[in-house]
Image: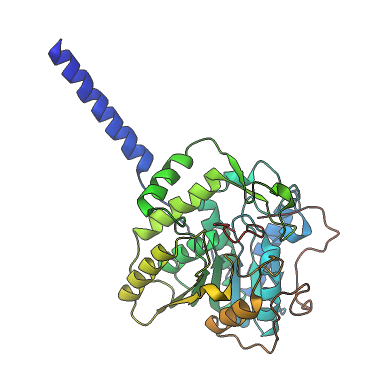
Length: 366
């Protein structure tokens, strides 16, 4: 009997160890470049995206955008919106970059931009989906400009950093409020929770449990997030943290804010130091101070606590773009007028709304 019990306990221990290994192992991610070989090829790739998006119930704000001068330019920017926001989040900044002479692409993430902001698919978005979003933009950008710059915010800051680490052909990468882990908890705890939640049934959480879908902020952003989607972003961050070393991108710039109670700034600073050690002189980190009051989402002009008077000049400086635009603390209108090259779908097209978090300064994946 004793031998039987010992054998049973041994078998149980092995089973638990195997289950734990399966559950907590860091998943692998991949991305295979398929760059456009010409300007015409880039337009064909974007047209394919437009055709696909025309079959989805997206809002005009939720559709991918392409701002082009009608020919290949010296620079091209790929802008990646936040996890529960939509391409519209980056349109004001995109128009400034376009006015500087560059072409700009804002690809939509897989489950972003739906007209029904309370849809039940947003929580299905995975870390791989974020990589696919970045890859689609970079593939198109290869035919739009000579120097490719990639910009990501929050969850898409993780995928942008992954591309900086793994993909050839990128001149510079700027990540803002990167969501490498959650604020206020140990990295080990968040990693364990992400491993569990990425495999558990999805649960939706309101950014603001009292205001719910009445939360102030961008009218196209989702007022809630899915636990699996958030966990999937952390899973991608876990994989990236194991790869830190020589960058494929020529430069990596990181912009964070001290008032961010969503993303783990301490971990971001640790990773920045590791990147700098492996890439001397090619990595920078800048942090807005607490008195600046810059929110996690430092891009969307419709955030109630937006400080684009501080963030836009800093972003443009890091991107090495000169602009004569004067920024006020908040903008009720786009900072610059609609560019002639804006190929974003007109409001009359079929479709409706999309992701990065609404006006919550604590929103980790906006």
